[in-house]
Length: 463
Image (cartoon, rainbow, N blue to C red; front, top):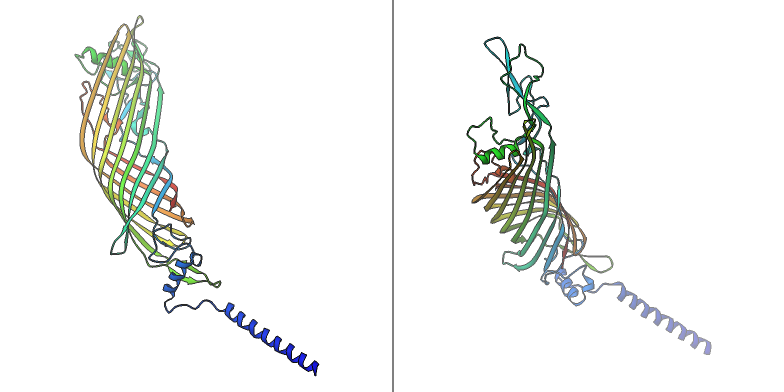
């Protein structure tokens, strides 16, 4: 009897344990009951327990850096882009700076009525039989190198309007780009033939010389091309037109400042998906997204062009004139204007790529300062200093376009790369201010055009 009671007790305890275990298992295996509106339930759960949501709260939460895999997420409160902008730059228009006479002089043969021949000395190299142009320096040949610079943007979330557009304010700076180029040409002493000597036949190289001088010259007029020169014009002629060395250098810098407003329409809402582990995850909606830009822009372009010459003029074996010439030109371009732009991005969650453009009318507050210094020594001791300053307000245009791509490394860290093109018109370029005239005047040329292209690389941080 005692054994039967014990067996019944064991069976009862075992059955009770199984019932309790089954109930606990059933409770643990079923997720928390959801409301009829999954999104609303997810929002409430995420509000009470942020770990349920992947990277942030659902719609209606405060601004923040967004999420790791979604296309947009919540807009950031602040963001900054830090990187480098590597650009090339076009040259100025073609303009002759200096050219060199042949080793045996530059001349032509003429026939006399007595069937004899005489030489005619030429100051400018020609394409005749006994003449050829050597080592010509032109502004177009001064290829500006590629210049790296700094690129930075800082933005702040401003508001969200009734049309579901997010508004941002951005401050942008890029610049510290400095392009430079230089070239040096060496000369030699070339003969000046006695034009009164008669030759019975045309010879390969005349032998009777009147004087010798440096083979390099500039577009400044010479004493054989212009009569009744003033003393200052003679000094400039001796310093620039009988060169043994010509050296040119060209340098330009550019800096850009912008204050822009950006309008970004919110795209299609991200999806809220429950994972097998019971956690909710925000997933992106791939598609095309656009943003619009408007603002004020200030762009500064400064340029310097220098021509240095060393010359020698030997009128006779005992009369020598040595000269040094400096022709320096500085230009300052300050462009201020309004601009508008747009971006279109094809978004694939972490990846995105697209096009960007902006342009606008500007006013260029341009100025230039040129100085000519010519010094001669020996049989002609003289110094000439001339300075020309001019200012002008000119309409200008600045336009940019590019292709860009982004990759989201973290919820608040985005890599950005782009290939950019830029056009600027209405500039005062330093080489285009040169005046190789007998009597230069104070004026400024603001018809310059600059084309730049390059690559921008950077990291964008959102918080």
